[in-house]
Every structure is written in C-alpha cells, then in structure tokens.
Image 1 (cartoon, rainbow, N blue to C red):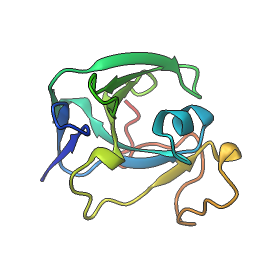
Image 2 (cartoon, rainbow, N blue to C red):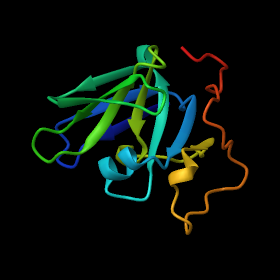
Image 3 (cartoon, rainbow, N blue to C red):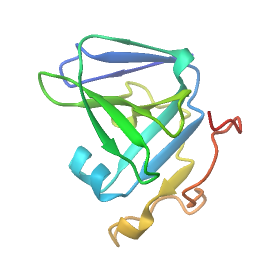
Length: 140
C-alpha cells in the first residue's frame, strides 16, 4: 500500500510504501510553533521506502535529542511535509496531517508531554516515553 502526503498547493509531495513504522505525537514548544497547533504528529518510514517530488525549502533545528532535524516545506505556502531526523538516519518523518489517507494508521507514542496543554488527552494506550523504537525494533 502506498501513502501520499502533499503540501497545501500540492506541488511538494512524498510517497511512502506500506504503513509507518511508528506514529508519534510531539508536544515540544518547537513542534507547537512549527504546526501552529497543540502538538505535531509524525509518521516515520524507512527513507528507502519513500520518494519526494517537487521543490522544497529547508530549515534545520536541534531536536529534543540534541541532534538536528531538517524540515522540508513548500516554498509557496510553507506547509512542512517531511523532515529528516539525524537521530534516526535511516528514517524519514512525514507530517501526519499532510497524508491523504490515514485509514489503519494509529498513534503509537506521545513525547515531550511536559509541554502538553492540560486539555490534550491522547489515547492512554500510547507509549509516553521519549526513547522508544519503531515497530520493527530498528532505530536506524
């Protein structure tokens, strides 16, 4: 099964094969600012299983891990579509809200909850630790 994520205008997109290895909600202040929302949600795939098309601008910031995250966003409207986490060099994070179809995809993890707004209550069954591994057990 192939999943596609697109920016607001559709010129920047990424296709991913199969289901994500992990879906993670992050409540850090940087993700709140990046999304303009209460948290960001990433669907992690193996980089080898994805293909991006279209032009993007990038910016780099340090993540909670202390390692860099390189964000790719639409140069026209600013939608962040995907990012490359240095702490997981073989994975790519795709912005969950940009995915066209999310049937069968569930949240696995919620991180940086010290910054979570008190009214946010995600599924109690998700793993709330910062250091968890993707579904296949491979952190790379």
